[in-house]
Image (cartoon, rainbow, N blue to C red; front, side, top):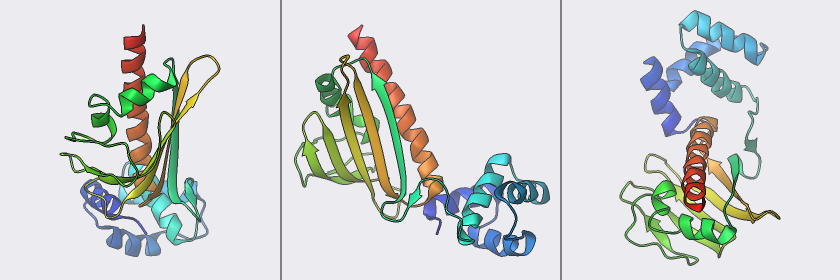
Length: 204
């Protein structure tokens, strides 16, 4: 079922609660329709944007038993994002775990210890707990935004290449729903671009 973030977003965007949408769509669409047919009908009949027509179709489709991209039985809703940058593995690690790099993905914290079991909470409300720490290679943790009902499972990998570059791979599991999955895809893509620009700019 959709989480609190999606429920609030759909009500803000359309003025209609998710529960009201479900009741309406049960009457307005045929469960045998294709995704494209359903989305077109929703957009035309209810005058919603293309983006919200897509989200309503995806979310309602799940109630019909359709499984969207990014949903697995074991890990729930998940996302993977990666980027290769022209900087050595050790320098990337040092930046990500430094007072300059931590604000990008955790926020403003007065302290951050690289040890298993360490719990953190930033001034922005991002909180979590480190569960695996492999220096220069991997961090695994519980990670939660303040507006989320429950934490996700976040893993950051640093993968060295033969040419001296480093691939930063981010994998996040146990997200509320595919709407939050897309929000996090955009979030991490933006953060990786910022990391790339900063570190490659300093490395020139």
